Length: 111
Length: 115
Image 1: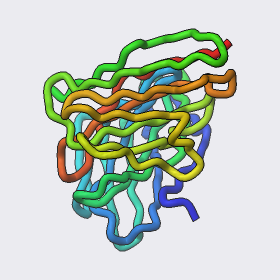
Image 2 (image 1 turned 180 degrees about the horizontal axis):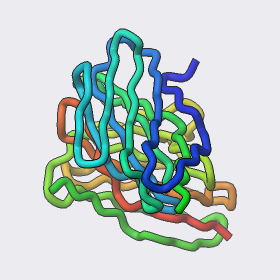
Image 3 (image 1 turned 180 degrees about the vertical axis):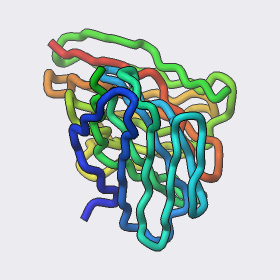
């Protein structure tokens, strides 16, 4: 079983729609959760971080965490073609030097 | 803040030669630096984790004698690919962390092509 699971996609949504990206993790002791965006040929960039149950909103992005279900998601409202990228979920524990990345979900936003 | 640079951004070398890639945290001191490799259309693969002044911890299947990592200071880590072969051609990305929650800041990556 992988530490972090993501659907590889591609997930296709029309411009202006809500894109929902999901991630599950196996380590129940995980404490920090991150969403990174990676454009083709580029390195990942941080989109959101979340540490406690519930929702965290930042502009068009909302991260949702449910530790009981070991589930973290990213919602992108009013999706734009420029949001087309691979989204990586990362999970870790405080003070641990290893964080686990999912394999990423490819998002296509169609004009 | 939290900017990480890598040099070079792109390198082409002949088979059998060694290539050194530098990773620098420009505006913070990194307690930990990570090295990843990514083949086309594949996910990030962690190669090794290093802390300043100590030996790197390599992931299973990564040859430590082939991929030499030196974390000489809190702002600099280097990855040397020794005796490179065409199958080592890949996108190498470093990241650095200074926070206890482990948030990683990524460098722009180095694309290595071995002829």
